[in-house]
Image 1: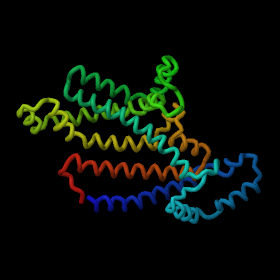
Image 2: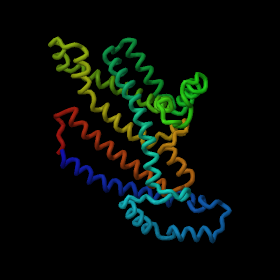
Image 3: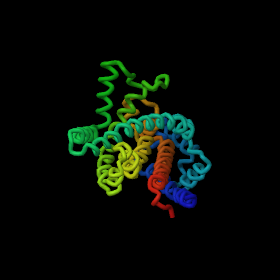
Length: 308
């Protein structure tokens, strides 16, 4: 397994270089000038030219790309054109905030989605099964921003149970509504996936054998059936967690959550290319390592899987 991990980590290098290259090219293709955005439309052309020369943005794109890759390898993602703050330092501040939200949302998604998915499979073709399917269909079809606004109106503004914006003192009450908003849609997907994989597993011969031995239904379901149904579920959980870290933009915007998503959106609006490039690179790293962890988890869930 150690060789497999090393091989996967080595393969990450060309993937990240490809991400860097594509992102860098896009910065030259998309319209907008960061210096004009930074100085304003009424700025003097001579001032804009001087700042462009100081930032060495007059160099050919391939020279800028090589220089950017060199800086990135040293852990320097540059400075924001707008705030002049270090991009790496900003990301180190924003990512833990979003990670906290993503982890809370995943707890909501796993607790709700896996449990009701198991219930739907165990009580297949009953009212419980049909209720779970209706729940899943409703929340898969519901836009995240609309569901978040409903929660804000009902539980924040009307009942006053939870704060509707910001992190406050960092207490749990500030994260309840954002976590439910972000996690419920994933819970609906997990419920459908858990139901279908559990239905497939509990019809296998070894499950009937376990029941014929007189094992309790709880042991049959949670020890024998669930473990063998976990591989597709773990895949969705891993990819969802990575997507939360990268794309919880709507939830962070609705609840004024000062995380990674809002940081990237603000950078895109202001054509802050250094921030965009650094954020895309960090997002790619998160996805690649999330995939690696998911792949390694397969071996623990199913010992028949070998890494060669």
